[in-house]
Image 1: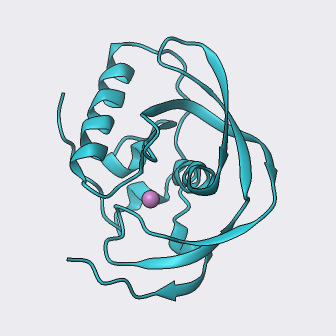
Image 2: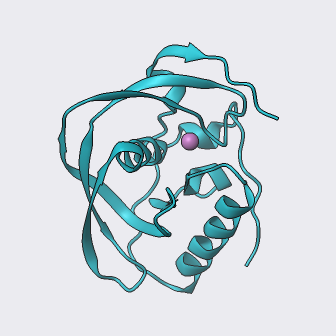
Length: 154
Ligand code: NI
């Protein structure tokens, strides 16, 4: 297990489209473990996508306070409603802004055991699903901000 370096805005890795994971092998599981360690060591992150640690695979880890979710090849299969909350990103420190996202999304993904799963998210989890899945297609939240906000952090 290891804490990986988080790629910062400006690095072209963040703008690439990630490749689908074809086989869940030891390497993929190791990446998920390292992404989990990296997310938890960040202190304030609720989600991390593989390109943020320089790996162009469709892998995401999320923890909005309800336990760890590990998503392999996640896809949004349902969405409804709208919310416009403030987001930030571990790859763009110090920048915060409001982004319009669905109020509810359902994500279909494969778990580390190769099982197909579905997970519904509302509120912060819905935001997190959208934000992290965007990363897999080279999209940053900044691209979608309708209002930047100042947040003082200690
Ligand atoms: Ni992000």
